[in-house]
Image (cartoon, rainbow, N blue to C red; front, side, top):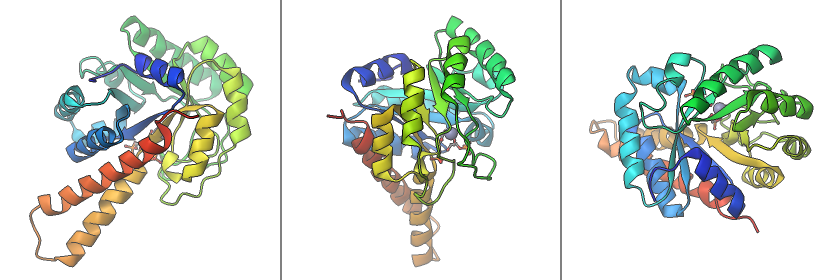
Amino acid sequence: MTIQSSAVAFDNALADNYSLVAFNVITLEHAQAIVWGAERAKTPVILQLSENAIAYQRDASPLAAAMVALAADASVDCVLHLDHITRDDIAHKVADWGFSSLMWDSSTLPFEENLAATRDMATWAHTKGVWVEAELGEIGGKDGAHHPSARTKPTEAASFVAATRVDALAVAVGSSHAMAKKSAELDLDLIADIANHVDVPLVLHGSSGVPDPMLRDACSAGIRKVNIGTALNLAATSVIRDVLSENEALSDPRRFLGPARDQMADVVAHYLELLATPRS
Ligand code: 13P
Ligand code: G3H
Ligand code: ZN
């Protein structure tokens, strides 16, 4: 068990009929919590670094190196992935950082322009052995505005995947990013319809807002990668609020970051046990 490529991780998941769960890393504590939670669940896991998280780090090399070190020492398979990348110069760092895959996000562009930009990125990435996820049908919430009504059209998904040759497709099926409540309603029939039209794994973004039973149903319908970010941050910040309000004199960050990390590891183990174990 060690660093695993997305290509092999998805082959394994398809063969054994489970979905992969990807968690967003912002700090070292997130990365530790993700690996420790996965070790507890005894399942593979994807650690992903978004373009916004990279911007927050200014230079993401130290955090990326920590992710590589944690993944290399893990007792389970860990995939290292870049999430929501819109800039070529950041995409081109993927291999330098020791990551095997990236999500190219030109989903805000009109269909033809999204297709052309995605095809160019996938062509470059495949010459480097990098696996590429792309998005069709803009999933809301990245800009703070929720529009869970966006939908990916199955026939467009088919032509988009064929023309771009991407390895996975993120689809708009009722979820929205950054939801603090699990109130999203997924269009399960649409997921199954898209899955029948394309032969690459489907990815659900904004999964923190989806109730657990619906996440399982979405995986049964064809979702093969579930992205979780906000649920980790909600867990961490709620513990930090509690610890600090109980002790206003506290100044040692280990006293609130430690419990926050434990809470995030619990969330990670929960989602992996729910989704990353073989479906009967
Ligand atoms: P949430 O933050 O809404 O869970 O979304 C995560 C995600 O889609 C990462 O790409
Ligand atoms: O897609 C959403 C992820 O949680 C990453 O969010 O772009 O704000 O880092 P972010
Ligand atoms: Zn996302």
